Image (cartoon, rainbow, N blue to C red; front, side, top):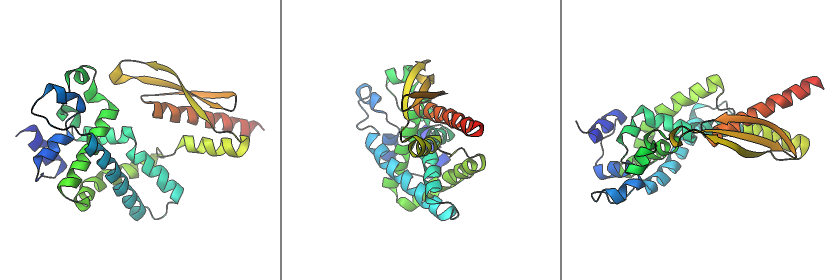
Length: 233
């Protein structure tokens, strides 16, 4: 069984046009090194991003009727963020199947969250073009529903940045700003340190494997500072 056949079996969908699947797995870095490849996955990624947003929105609206608009928005953001889609890509071992150029391969591209996320989006875009939105939903909804239920259980969808912004604007009349103050580690395993500044005050710092994670961590620490101030007042 070839890798493409194996992937189609694992996602439960057989392509009528296998060329779309091949394109979904083709990173732009590989085109100059392989004359057999004609197009990369960037346009499919663009399409898949929108399709995932739509399916996630429709699913959450139907399944979680008790949630407010704000809660649905935060939960959707958690489902479609880079790290989450990278996690879904890993479920199907997409990192092992991406067609990469040598430079991207050597720099750890197969493990990079952003690249895995992009490839998953391209795969969804390819399924949509090869079939329709109903077939995409059949593939995506069980995955997204499982992650949504996990997120609600452990409240990992809670958006610390939004909460901090609401407090800062309402209490101080200021909008929080985030500044990356450190970036360590190799390209495929970086760690970022971000500082949150409100007005002229440096509130807190946070770390994460992406700038987004580090910003959320910094915002969470700032909210703890705010909570301590409230308790002491």
